[in-house]
Image 1 (cartoon, rainbow, N blue to C red):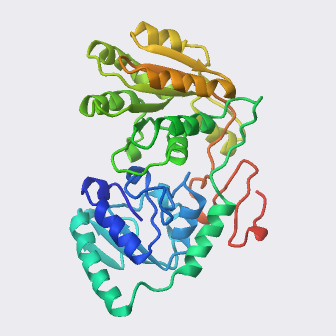
Image 2: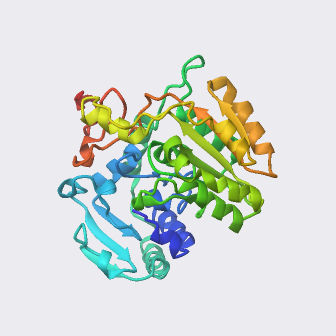
Image 3: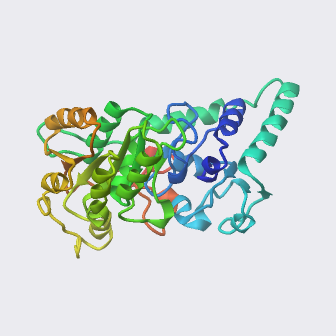
Length: 375
């Protein structure tokens, strides 16, 4: 269970060696995406409220949970007294105040993540040499693989249907590649970006995490582009978030610091709308924005950037290709996406992680999918 502390401690090499040497599955929190490569078979990606089903269930069913640079926040644990009920907890953190703050640690370790993982690696190597290798974890790994196959991230993009936000993000990732530095705002687009963009290197994913800072993406992308001028930087933002700090495009133009902003424009404050739909009987309040106000293409041009728009699935590839070809100034892409699309999986607020909903049909998987009731 890897948190952002691993990246801050520059401990990703040691993490990789420990995980692969001992055949330990890894989950990476929202702040730790890229700390362990998504492409590796041991990576279960992100746990939590909108995390990968397999990552969530791996933690729930674990007998040993090694938390490194993570804080057991409520978005990861769900209902705390139902979180990983059978797990022995080893908690590693440089800040003693974090140890046991939310979940009691059976083995508390106060220390720098890199130093602790290095010591753990040496001890594991010594023991495995004496014992002829790591224990047989094949039944557990087979269970994880079965969950991954049955409950992947999913969406339904019809060729003649409304543009799905997941499709736009996935195609952008495929075209831009894993070396791109990705920044996000807060909301549905943040979760979709963490789900459908695959991160294989540390410090290629920047977001405000638990601070929940709407408006973070544009100025953070500006800073990333200034600090790493040889890297492509893409801000994946929502229409609500973008309007809070879009004026920094003026700084981008005047200081010649180009980056790309992909607006996932669903004409709503999407995450708030989703909660109002699911938990407040569709009593929508103060969430509607507009596809057209402002006109993001004209707004981009007013700031000296290039404005592009995709409204249909067959326009996405051409628009992305055009955006990636422009390197001398910033680009804003207005992806006009399906306003009704919701972000799944989802653990309802205050619920146990065992109550995870994998899709809009309301499936709540049990240990045996055949026993899962329909909500």
